[in-house]
Image 1 (cartoon, rainbow, N blue to C red):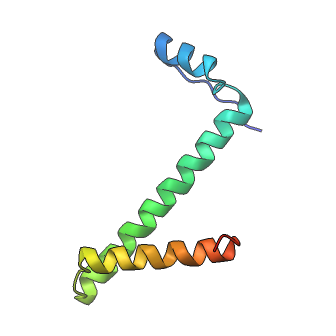
Image 2: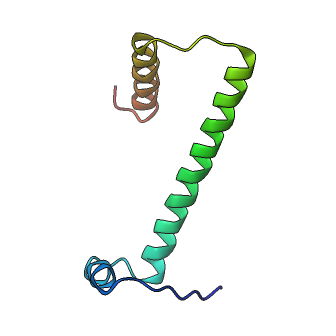
Length: 82
């Protein structure tokens, strides 16, 4: 285990404490979520660089919307929520 110490403005620390966010478990969960988001963003940017280098035309908003809907439909089916 690693012990860390941080300095926060009093108001932020008070609000975080009142929200139950200053426990080791809550802080660990928050950091893990931030790490996942950062990795996802980094991955997206790397993919965007490869797409740009490959000269692939951007998708229209209609195409993007159709792809998002298709992914959501597949996820709902996998979760058993037709």
